Amino acid sequence: MTSAPSCSPGSPVAARTDSPQVSAHRGTILHFLSDPGDSAAAGSYELIEDGLLVVANGRIDAVGPAQALLPTLPAGIPVIEHGDSLLMPGFIDTHIHYVQTDVIASGGRQLLDWLEDYTFPEERRFADAAHAASVAEFFLDELLRNGTTTALVFCSVHETSVNAFFEVAERRGVRMIAGKVLMDRNCPPDLRDTPETGERASRELIERWHGRARLHYAITPRFAPTSSDEQLQGAGRLARAFPDVFIQSHLAENHAEIKWVGELFPEARSYLDVYDRAGLVRDRSVFAHCIHLNSTDRTRMAHAHAAASFCPTSNLYLGSGLFDIAATDAAGLRFALGTDVGGGTSFSMLRTLADGYKVAQMGLQRLSPLRAFYLATLGGARALKLDDRIGRFARGTEADFVVLDLRATPLVARRIEQSRTLEEKLLVLMTLGDERVVAQTYVMGQATRHAVDAGALGGASANRAQSLHRSHAVSPQRHP
Ligand SMILES: [Zn+2]
Image 1 (cartoon, helix red, strand yellow):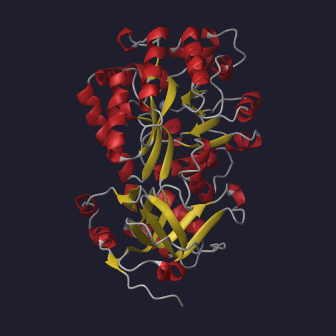
Image 2 (cartoon, rainbow, N blue to C red):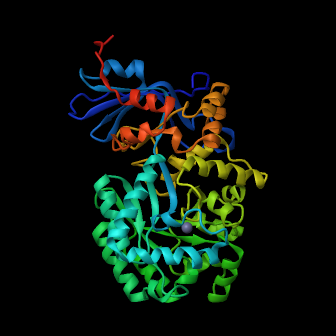
Image 3 (cartoon, rainbow, N blue to C red):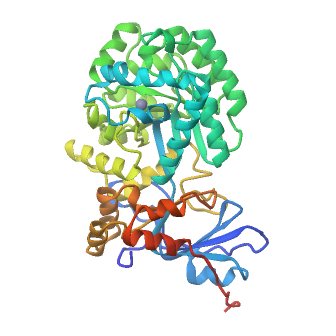
């Protein structure tokens, strides 16, 4: 991205020399410092065209211009050359269902029919631990292939589905948030828990998994129609007992759903109010969709420090409606992006950004490419209140990052070649890109994609991926 405008890279931080597990990655580095908004506010991002990312023991140790940092590296430290590929923090998906992996691209129905016809029958299979573990493996492979290193994940009503997911995630060392779905009514009888069993199982899962390795628990009422008021009150008790646990649910996705919530909870002021009265709207609450909200609800969510997850591929596929970015911003409500697989149609955050851009266009609004990539990285981390650990490059943050190949396909290469500014290039990547653009995904500094996977990319990308993996020792110059 040699022609892109660059903001100041800041002062490079010297790499420590006392760590036994140090590596360095050289390429174009882009990460965000704040929300660029629509106008690419100066200072909202850092672009280092020939940059170096130094990783020590799984964490970022230094970031800065390669010319400044290379001489500070001790002899023998491997420097992985990524050419002009773009190094960015790993993508963060703020809403996805691992148990719906096998119903992606099914249906063509609206939300309530889709749940009945496809989702519930599929989720029944997660009572089986072996099935749950095998889907969890595939799901995490797919996330990493797409550059997603952290996700907020729905499991099924079965504890086995949560245990299987966390066991696989722990083994892979990824930062993941997940929870057991609570649902005690308006779903098939064999998929129901009760207020008592749901609360007890959630508590046990929190005690077992929350804070273990890089894992966090999320209290997960599916959505208001499938939980009795008693169950929601129990979820609220858990939320008060465990204030740093996450909460995830769905909110105001579809008109038929909203009408149904009004009938089920006639005493509530609104759909949001059903959750609010149970104490579920707070810090670390993330509600998917939030399409058909009024300004009172948006403002209430903002004041409570809750966040919305904008899931454009799902909203388009299920015909749910268009998320209102301008109204969300006007209320000061924080939002980030979610794929919502399996209602959503892709695991790729790039494709999700592309559809987000189109949803904004349909509402005569704008999702600038810079803001889109902010939302997929630091914005996601902020929505989850994990930005002290992930979503940006700073000394001490976790080295979860992606390598984006600007020549992944002939068309991407051709359009990148003709793009002048950083914004133009990012728009090409998000509009034409998918997992083919993700040359490598690193988790805590470790490459997650195998050579065979890179080989499957074919042609120039495969050659490129191989060259990326060939690290070499740099002979450090002594201090200038
Ligand atoms: Zn969902």
